[in-house]
Image: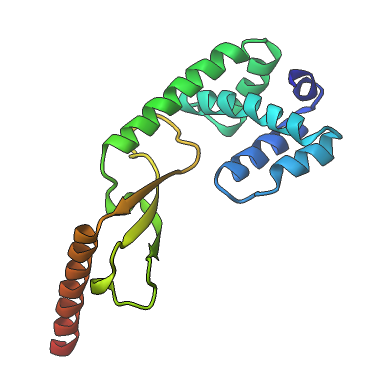
Length: 188
C-alpha cells in the first residue's frame, strides 16, 4: 500500500491525513469507502492504507512536531523511507500503554464524554425494585488524561454490567441528588 501513498503529491497527502484524522474522531464514518473510490482500490486495500497511515501518524504526532507541516513531511518521509514497520510497532506500543493506563484509572467527570445507560430485564413491566435479575450495561467513552504524551485513537469504550445492589446504590444516589437540587431550587 506504500506505493499508493508514494504516488500522492503534497496536497493529496495533506488531504488524506486530514481525512484520516477526521475519521479517527468520528467525523468521517465513510472514509474506507471514500478511499476505495478515490484510489480505485478495494475496501480491504483501503483498510490496509489506514493500517499503514494511522500508526505512522500517531508516532509522528507523539513526537511533538513543531508544526502541522512537519507532521505531513514526517509521515511522507516515513512511508517513503520504508521504516513504516518499525514506526508502526512503536506507535502500537504507545497505544497499548495508553489503553492500559485508561483501563487502570477510573475516568474523571472531565474525561467522560458521554454514556449510554440501558436496562435489560426478564420482566420489563415490573418496577426496578421487583425485577428478578436486573442487569444494567453502562458504556463510557473516555479519552486519556492530558498528562499522557500519547494519542489514544480516538476514544475507548468500556462496558460494565452492574448487579442489582449496584443499581440500587446508583438509584439511591440519584434520588439524594435530586432531593438536594430540589431544595436548592426552592430556596433560591
